[in-house]
Length: 283
Image (cartoon, rainbow, N blue to C red):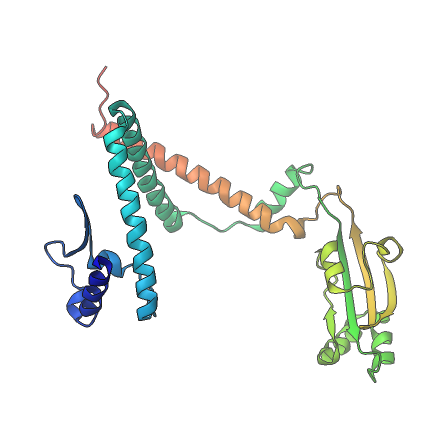
C-alpha cells in the first residue's frame, strides 16, 4: 500500500514540470529513520524512455536496495565497535581523497599531456627491448579469394592472383563484388587463428602442408574455390614484427609519459605548498 502511494505520488508529480525542480526542503517520498529519498533521487534512476510498467519495476527495485543498504548501515553502526568504526571511516575518507585526487589528475593529464609519440620513439623503444616482444602464437601474411566454382572469370582471376603484381591485384580488386570472401593485403600480419576462421579448407589438421612462405594454392571444398598465397610466416617464440606490436609500444610509451608527468605534477604541488607555507610540518 505504501509503495502504491509512492508510485501514485510520483506519477502525479511527473505530470507537472515542477517535478524537475529541486525544492529547498527535501520532498521526501521514502523515509527510513533519518534517511530519505526525494523525487529527484528517484527520477534519476529512470531511463529516458521508460514506461509506466518500467517505472514501477525500476523504482521498486531501487527502493528495496536503498532501504536494505541503509538498514544494514544503521545496524552496523549499532553493533560494530567504535574502534572498528573509526578504522572503516578512515578507509572511507582515504578512498574519498584518492577518488578526487585521481579524477583531478586524469583531467589535468587529458588537458596537458602531449600524446604524440613519434615513429623514432617507437622504433627506438622496440629496438632497445629485443627480448620483450616474443610471439605467443603464429602469425602469417597472406591473401586469399573465395569464389563460386561457376564464376565465369575464375580462369583469369586465377591468372592475376598467381601473377600478383600491382596491375593484376588492381584487376582482382575491381571484381571483389563477385567474390564470396576475400582478403588481399598480404603485408599485414594476422594471427594464424584468424586464417582458420576465414577458411575451413586450411585448418590445424593440414596447416603444415599448406602454411609455407611464398606458396600459392588453389583449393576447393563444398563452400567454393579458394586462391591462397602465403607471403611470410612467423612462429610462436619468434620476435614480433614492429608493425604488429606498434600499438602496444605506443601505449607503453604513453603510459610512461603519463607517469612522468604525474610524478612531476605531484612534486611541483608539494614544493609549491612548502614554499608558500601552505604545508607546515611541526617537529
